[in-house]
Length: 258
Image (cartoon, rainbow, N blue to C red; front, side):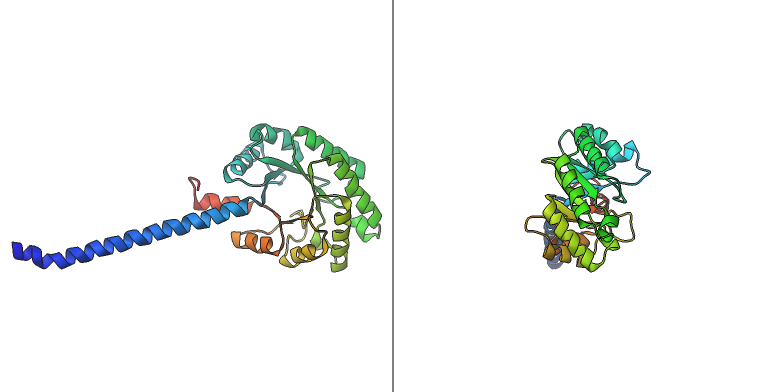
């Protein structure tokens, strides 16, 4: 029997070595996975987790707010009718963002100002307004500038982002909107509503970075479907991302959290 044990001994050593190698690879994979998830958590700090569909219900808003808190996003961006409800759920644990003059931007300035002031009273921390593209294309840049300035006055110290709807503009008009938003006192320029003919492109974010004043935030929105997309936009100069996809991806990968 002693001889049998000796003959089996090399195989036992080999099994022990293979077990150690498997454990080492598993630990390396865990470290890698933790690193990847930490990187994704950093990206989520740039995200306005967004739900602006006409069909959004209170239950949907509740989920968005809860996910925003859990995953540490910059804000949750929701329709204005739900701002007070969302703020009561958030209790300051995540910022509430809403949209005004949305999605067309051709409301009168006084209406936009009322919408902004009401949303802030209801608990919004950030306002995304749509610029008046029709007035820009009519050659009335002064109207567009004064429209944004008035809304910024209504927002006070609260963050104002200006959606210029890049998919509807020529290159020259995009550059002109960069100038207008830079002069307006707004805090961000934003590519898109997500409700027109196109969303954010890498070329448009690069153009914004080149043409806006120093310190003006850039929000890419519409069409950001993956963490690779998000990293690309951030590298090009985006300081905020409007998307619903990234939280959904992370929830699918880690159903029990990080």
